[in-house]
Length: 314
Image (cartoon, rainbow, N blue to C red; front, top):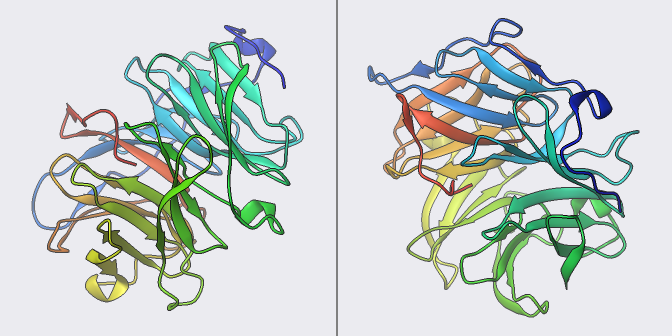
């Protein structure tokens, strides 16, 4: 494990900022409204896109997950690479100053979260799948084992979140289950995704204020909201949309107005990378761009100039 604090940009990697460097077309409002969002996008490209569609900031490394924090810093879950053999976590400013970093010790780090009080949570995939909590110096202060298959490390888990009550909610892909764990590893709750369509692997699971859980099922190409008993309260499929925009929907965010934004990581040459729907499944906004790659995870930052609520439900 390696840790560094406040290292200069030159000692780490080059950040790119400035709207003039990369351009993305402005988001499209489909119902005649004037919906505009700024957002952070994570994946093969790590960037912040303004409401005008221009890239305001970017980072040269790929990311699995990320957050724009209330102070403007970014918490990045860095993809495994020659530089980060087991993946990594870094908190950085837009100017490139590094405030925290931690190197994964296994196959990869799939997600991270900054916790109230200043500690960090990270989830490692590997022979010993686990959730770790780290202090500001990168020291492990707690460890929670995950009960998941470990034959395929990459497909163990994805966007784990620590909940306000202290438990963790964990989407387990190949196990086709979302589990809530106590800190000692005890399973408190679980939801098994449908058997059909095939490969309905849970990728992101968001615990909502009413206790329901919003789940993206990647290759199944649908999103469900379930109650504590596992009953489906809401579901969105491609049949609900004017075109099959859902292609490997990885990330999801529930906005303060009740709308749901979804990313299609497998969009490929399909230009619609993000879409927003209302509770009654009306498509009200898309973000389109000509890039071949999709967006892995994201965070909607503003809507028509107004900041979205924190913490983001993503």
